[in-house]
Length: 283
Ligand SMILES: C[S@@+](CC[C@H](N)C(=O)[O-])C[C@H]1O[C@@H](n2cnc3c(N)ncnc32)[C@H](O)[C@@H]1O
Image 1 (cartoon, rainbow, N blue to C red):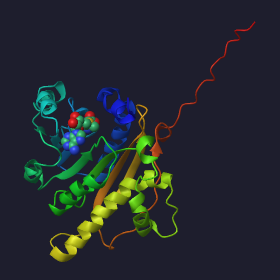
Image 2: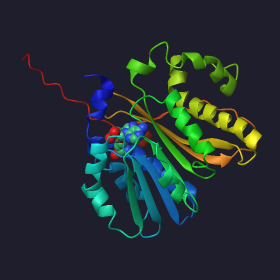
Image 3: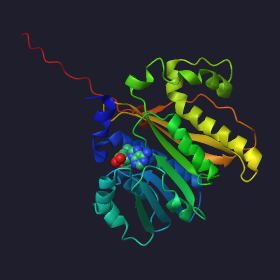
Image 4: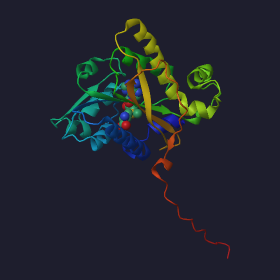
């Protein structure tokens, strides 16, 4: 079975490393965001909305109004997920709203426009594949439509399966662009591309948006501040998780900095393992 298939067949509650890294990201957002009344969380569904549970385990539903907008491209999963325990139970709480949108993200942007004013947005683009060209088009649209703004947060999942990211062609057309964003002296080897591909693609979407703002002048350009970058591996397939906060950009096309992954379990401090006893079976 291919690595990515193996990963996606693995049930969400059993993805312990993913759950722990997501918990770290939500705690980072909570500490960083300061006081706010309402939060809109935009995510990709799945059957059990497990990440919605991760979210409400960190953000206090007695103190905040929490709107969850969950895009699910599989109509059958979208319909079934509405009556599963997480959606059914959370939607009975007055401070929580859940809208399951049965389309690919974000074919239907109406629910986002309806919630946009007066709430901070946290996006979790929990892609199943490796983050690439097609996804930066969605990001560019979010910026242009004013749906991703100053003081919003963005989490991105990218599959970093060696079968994909160790291929010589991975990010090959972007080698010069890496140098443009990170400085001419950097060495663009495979490891560099793996740990920085999402940062570069987000940077490209932002610089497209910056060009757009120069002509329209309607919105200020944005800068994505990287808050966390995790690598976890619940199956044979390693996954990356990036967390950014957006800010108004003061300098044009800010330079990017090479950033390493916080690795699971090292990011959580590793327990010293006991030496395994090897019985002498030859005497
Ligand atoms: C990675 S999971 C989401 C899991 C959830 N975020 C969690 O942590 O519990 C994958 C689900 O998202 C859906 N999905 C993947 N890509 C999508 C997209 N671009 N738009 C909408 N749904 C998507 C898939 O159909 C699948 O049911």
